[in-house]
Amino acid sequence: MTHLRRVLPACPRSPLLVRGLLAGACVAALAGEALPSTPVAPTLAVVAADRAADDRAVVTLAPHVIVLRATRTRTLPAKPARVAAPKITSRPVTWLRPCAASVNSAYGMRWGRMHKGIDFGASYGDPLYAIGDGVIVGVGQQSEEDGYGQITLIRHVGGIVSAYAHQSRMVVQVGDHVRAGQLIGYVGATGHVSGPHLHFEIRTETHGGQVDPRAWLAAHGVDV
Image (cartoon, one colour):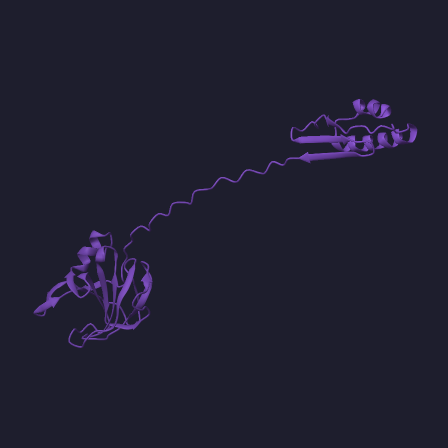
């Protein structure tokens, strides 16, 4: 043990090097010095910690055994900060023309009866577009006495309904969500007509409450 005491003070401060040097010292002590006849009580020595604050080494010395236990603590990385989800803004309300043609018949009394919409002088097969975002609430052939022929109805924000009559073909179905400017059908001559055109209405109810479409569109920034 005399050799072992001389080696311990000069040990480096690294736990791994301590283990190697102590093992060599123990072999040298056993080879060059007889073990005492009386058992030596186990001695617990605390070796200086490594330079890192989280390194600890404990050496247990017994008559024939040197045990080195080293532990190292690990610092887990901090959890990343939660990023707030971006706020979703609502789509701005946009209104457009239902077709490219100009108006050739106004809203009001005509031929002794009320003309409940405006007529666009479009050609057969011209495309028709939704005037704004909405939901399709009606598609099909109106009764013969109504004279609308094939018609599409779109409910918009605020409950306003736009109607597109006399179509030759329709490309939407009830329940479809449409955007302003989306294709909904084509100009035709179905119903009570003298030629192909678009009969267009603005309604406050699905099947009634017609108002002047030209004035309504003008109030919403659309010039027809």
